[in-house]
Image (cartoon, rainbow, N blue to C red):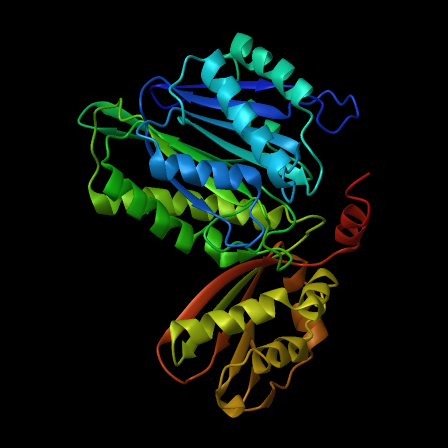
Length: 392
């Protein structure tokens, strides 16, 4: 059982947004008892869901942020003016039920794109949130925001400073449609550390860049990607900027790893590192091209040390380098150098190594000091099965 940061309460409810009468919660609330120091990062997809637009507006314009409400099952994306009104109505309802200032509620949704929210269900479940406030655990909350996730994703830190406890708690959801830029599918981070808004916003931004922005499941960026980070400040303890940054980065990297590990039908996590590029941007292009390659993904799923797919992906990344200088190390064993494979019985060497969950892929170019790292999942039969009937 996790102890929540001071000042925060959780609530979950079952609105049955999927219409299947499933015994699972799909509406959740994080409530801060006082104005929170808040930061948020969102999808860069041009088709931004209504809750993304509403939350961006509140973060930019509101003087007080007190709550985050999330529903799973319906994305409320590409729903036009009706969707915007539904989002505003849901925010106003939470403000009224919990006596919160106007504009103090952030919203997020996940699920099927294009379907309109059932506001009768939303309203009924909101009353359940009010009656259940404070009864939900962090585990309950993490489960309530899941869609196709196989397991809840939680990162947690409790530290002591001068005899005082400081707590950080983070959750995330996402298994498919994961290739974020500035966020992931959905994530919420709360703490009672005392921090100013400028420091908090910058620390969260840096942590996202080093965590969620370095993962890929399927190369898709969602319409709903959102990360919310709230600090109540009620521990009264301020951390050094470097320590705060280290904690946030470690937590978001931990959640990012869990996202990739839970990629729909995934059985492997590829840890792709590119070094020796002319620039970091060049290194990232190569890492993402390899990580997004369906041929590389399926090879890893099949435990096939098909190095040719990896070097071919690197070669089509749109980055200039000397192919004869590239070396490829797979699972700690150099398999390609000087433009040709290293002489060995690759099946005997690699089959037991590729049986592991975590697969290390190191590409060294010898062109400069640029480097990048990406976590990516493999591609299995289950991914196709899950996504071929997602709406049903």
